[in-house]
Picture 1 (cartoon, one colour):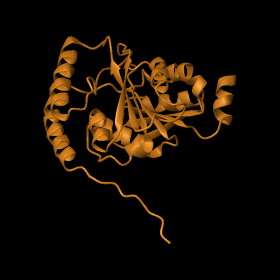
Picture 2 (tube, rainbow, N blue to C red):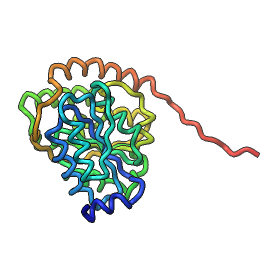
Picture 3 (cartoon, one colour):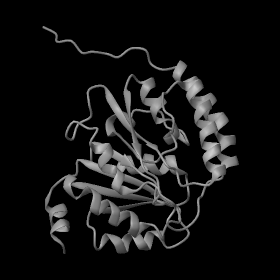
Length: 255
């Protein structure tokens, strides 16, 4: 076992939990894990939680194999596919760190970009009033149709929700675990985190991050499907914002 792996094992409870949804990504597990090990060694102790969202290939077996080399890896399983937001929600529930970092399991969010988000923290704490550090992709390596659909959806969303975010589809995000657990859950909520934290009185810091081509496999999501679901999501988000709780309680000492 390497010195790096020894340090992970003895370093104690992780402060940082990386939650990564996986669906039929057996060809990307090792690439992502090795990238995280290389990029995040200075930030130990951390953990990587792979949430297998009902994969039908060898994803689970590959994660188990990788965990023999990298003891910071954990595996959580969904018995059937429930979607990316459900996988993130499940991973956060099992996480031990107070700081959560999400990234896509297809390798298109390079792990080498994670330190950019960590640099926006105050040590291991979020800046005052900030609950979300959101990556925004530059130099996207997607197809032209996917880039066009994403740009159109982001413009509509930003105009209606005023979340001041140009790219909510970026999977690379870092947020406070306690704040996330208080957010209302719904499918596809991961695309609305800036609006959701803003609804609860928190701020978002934006960080430009790189983007890579998919290493292996194929996307599990179609542009048309995302667009049709997005209409309902936007209506729901507008309703949630209007119905937000407008006061917070403060306990006072009594004689």
